[in-house]
Length: 172
Image (cartoon, rainbow, N blue to C red; front, top):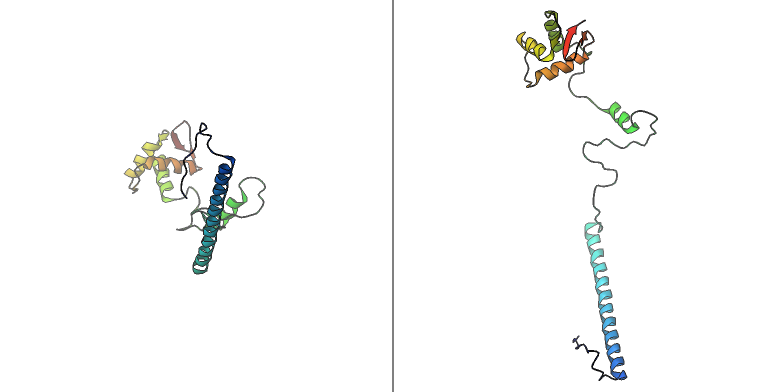
């Protein structure tokens, strides 16, 4: 379709017949473009059907499949939770399998016994750092770089250890 020059408002040389002819030409051009668009849409629909037959599914959705959750996420359980932990977390923790050996009674490991031995020789309350040094001096082997923090955790588990002041520990 050829582009026609736009006429300015000052040129009033067009008659009413010329204006109606221009209007009809423009309407026929619009009708031609609309029919081309419809034909192309029908062609796209045919291609989509061919792809669907070859692949099995045309629509590709973003995200995970329904029912799939991210890695490490517990499965969603639809039970009512009353108070405390949500039902999903409580059920998942019951089903969780622990690897390794089963845990023994709290405060009864080799490290706990080494801490008790170090504290029996002390007359005054001792800091966790000094207890760690005494345990290592007694022959306890560890690869930990922050062994004094582990000692602090173990001291908190032990029921026969008291804390007379902040940061100091002694046997009952």
